[in-house]
Length: 219
Image (cartoon, rainbow, N blue to C red):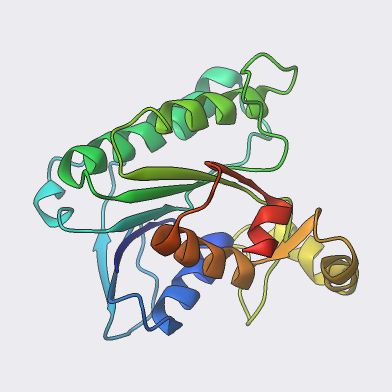
């Protein structure tokens, strides 16, 4: 399986990249980001790309892939809805529509979040925007598309958040997250489990297009 990965330097993306490089069924990984991962591996190739709303300059390098793991995202804290929609919906759909055209046999997996509003009418702005993003991704002509909705994610294997205050919270909460992961799989997963689940779903499919946190852990 040949994989394109977006967001490989973020916390979730780091975990997904690690599992892809370890998994023998993943033949190669193309990481697309604004900055390099800093990793070297025989299966890894990287493209540093600045404009995530226009992929015309690199589209010749995006064909021939079996799966895309889209782990790129921003926090809605401090943003109005128009700005958050631009950086979430517009950005994701720009990448996805390009890939759907170039790789009609591709499986596209999008990291959303627990509480996403599929009806697009709830009170939480971020949940409405994520719901619209999910709904329109599912309309694209991919072989299949899956929406991953993790809740709290415990980073493993030395993976860190790039956001200092978020990383500080993870350091303090690590023992609690570890305990909750064992006793409450509905509310906590790990970077390792998210990565492994993405690979398995891309390879084998899943009965439903939306996977909640419990589904991710079960896979």
